[in-house]
Image (cartoon, rainbow, N blue to C red):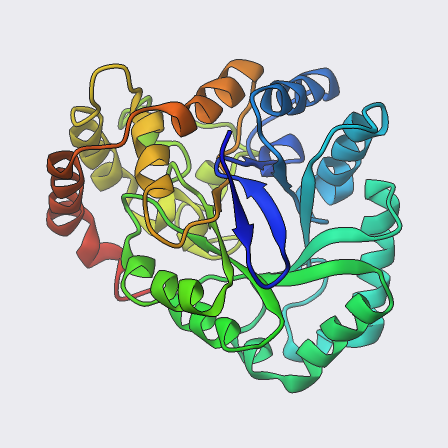
Length: 327
């Protein structure tokens, strides 16, 4: 699989990575054996970038990745984790002492002395403007606790503020055919600065797979049930902030645009891969077949100009007014 470089850190990532939120929690139950099988299928398919966080299953996702990699010393995978969501979301909690504590826990979970990439996990907006926060992150690099750092953001404005920081290696942001605003300013700014773009929620929480109907019921412990209106965290993380009924109807239109040989999910992933400035896209997978199918998107033929135009038209007609003024 093709890899792309994050220029500021010199780190490479496969164009299709693996998001591992679902291997920890909040997407229904996934047992340990199945979780390891997903990681194995992804790695065998050429995936070299795993994204996790210290809150995914309260560390379970990190520990599962460690278990997978511990028996494979020759397996090249760039592991990116996140920190900051284990405490009340106040800017004053983003200080060096806490960073060291959170980092110690993640290094234990991951079984490493130094983490490849650590991202602030959608912190309060004022954090992005704090010199002290980024000085503290620089200290973690100097102490060889982490090789590089980035941020995971909710809004395009936060992304642009972070990109202006000289040592931010990556920005993780929601980007998919139902969330196009980052194309306007964020991706061009990242390209100019040499900052990697990690595209998350690429399937709009599964909407773009085309599998769901208005009558689909998700488990009670699935965020697509309990956070549909932003009850637990930012609504934009669930169905990309799109109203579910609207999303299901638009997803049916989207699925009809898939060229021969593509699944709707692969169409969404391929569309993201082809956006200039994207380093890697991180779909999740609940089973090995999904992991392999996601990776296959990297090898599919480029989309036609007509398909790109049709996807843009769908976004403009059905989705833009719901999301573009919020994130």
